[in-house]
Image 1 (cartoon, one colour):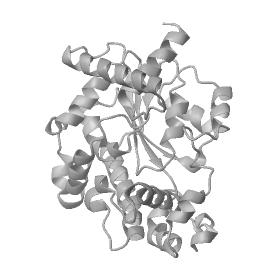
Image 2: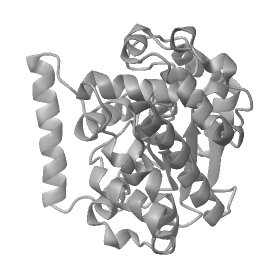
Image 3: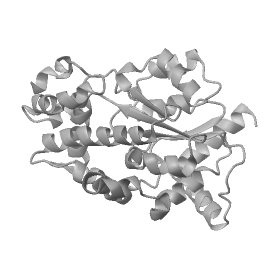
Length: 317
């Protein structure tokens, strides 16, 4: 397959599986055509496992951590197809599993992927792509790491715990929640992990307990060959190249990475570099930054954030 054929195949697949919003009639046609192909493949039972598949990798995170940037970087690989938050989004399943984790941990440890047909179908469908590597940055995958490990096994799975410092991450969560939901905090996918009396408390608990849930799954798996943690603040050309080795990605060079790291378009974003932008500033209430800092600072130390005071933006102090 030529480079052009591979690029075009990736574009079609992204239209099929990512939530792409058409901006004009011609784009609408291509999106509709891609979705039709996806349904035809399902109906014709063409989603058979690709024999050349080496690994599937998944990002596990709270969201608002820079997964869009990394998905675009890793998708440059010659041997991989990497999706940013592909459908289905599994909100109901994430809610259910996170509640079991919090309230019935022994049941959580013994969950089987067959108990969640939509999740199983998503994984089975992913195995049909004709690339050595499949990547998925859907942030609702965070409760499923242990199930994925039991289903795919250590040879065919890589899990990345993607994390961002809690002040910026929670501020971004609140900003997007208020942008799309109006005043308030929904975050229904986090289930009972997102408890609290105020929006800031719910966001802080989402950060604390989602990251702890991922960490607990990594402890249960106990295999550094499968599990790695990546702080988005540590995102550099060298750290990305190191993760390319971990994920067995081929053909990504230093120049390609540096070009994306310098790209400031909306489709890339730079959660590791940008301080809260104007949209996020306007979404926060007075005192929320300090509250999030105080609430999360103990948990943050376990993830390599010993001092967060410099991460509290002046406008929320």
